Length: 551
Image (cartoon, rainbow, N blue to C red):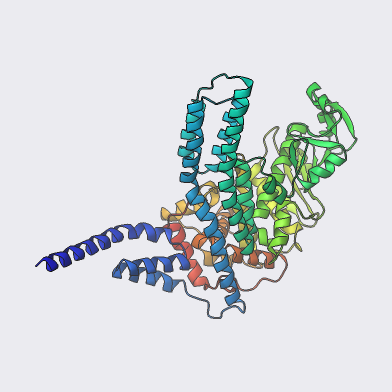
């Protein structure tokens, strides 16, 4: 009798576990956006004895069918995807474990600061910077720890006691950082081994948010410390030439930079100082524009000097973001070469020329835009881009869209043989990059306005271009200007965003490989890159935007 009762109890427990698993199935299904994630879900269903749910998953997997003819490198591509999975998992493991670990470790330091009543301004700020860096994606935990740090009382003490307390504090902070930096560098090595330098770049930048003076990370990014500032290679060359970058005044002679405080700016072309208002007046003439350089750009502008400094800063930040996102475009299969380009270690081609006009009239009179409604454009024939602004206002999103075309065009053979869906989609993917917590990043799907509108429309029953329609209508030789232009941009952005991110980003390298081949004039059939038929990709994208939970 007792054995029967025990057996029934075990059956009840098993049934309860199955019921609980079934209740969580729908959420798991929404998060599974591609073949690999669906297969993982199928295994989970098997483990939890969810027979009907497993059949639903198997039906979805069957619709992501392979192409009729596999590409010659299909096996090699799948192997590369598996390696990429390992790199992404290493990054994910670090990020997932970071929040609790940071809270625990910082909590120990904060508890010591409270007990010792040690909170001088510089130490308090050091801890706040560290918390903001390590918990950049955890706003609630970050705010709580910041508030706790700001509330700590600081007691006055003798110079000797202060020295001892400062030494103890420094030891604890360095110990805390060592634990996280070791994890980060382990993940970085896995990223390089998996040919994913872009993820390594993200980790280095993340580390520098938490530990702004980490020597190994700075050197890995090609930077060198001069006068307590970490400088990129081009800045190092400028320093040798006697120039330093000022965040408000641009390039200024090191020996006479105090003149900035007197309302002067330095004209790098004439190599003369002058009053800012007077130089702005002179260079507002399109025949006598400002000419300023940064690491990767030559800016020719009639806008005010302050606007030009903002432009150069933003363009350089965007350049690095473009290289990070499309890393393998610039180096093919050689991740080490790609990393050198992204991190600024390797030399790049000649600077990209950007022409910027202070108003629309100058833009139309001198740039001669290809359409009457254009507010900016890139000309492959002239190897330059052209924009205008209104006073201090810069059309950032438009500029970043056209700069994407320029960067990809200038670092290739200027092709684009994959069709407008690919070239325009690649630009839409990057155009909404914005500063978040001091770093330029793409954000989530909701932050890409065109892709977010695409998803909103299809979920509300609206008509948007499918993946199949985009590839057939706007492939090589297709007319981009037909129909609703806004819908064309939304469709192109939606396709590229999907291919870059679905299945946990597993096919990102395949999309970049297609992009590279298209720009270098040798694209193959789209399905050969992904190992999934066009019908299968079309189905997966429709489900991605209609049903899946994607951040």
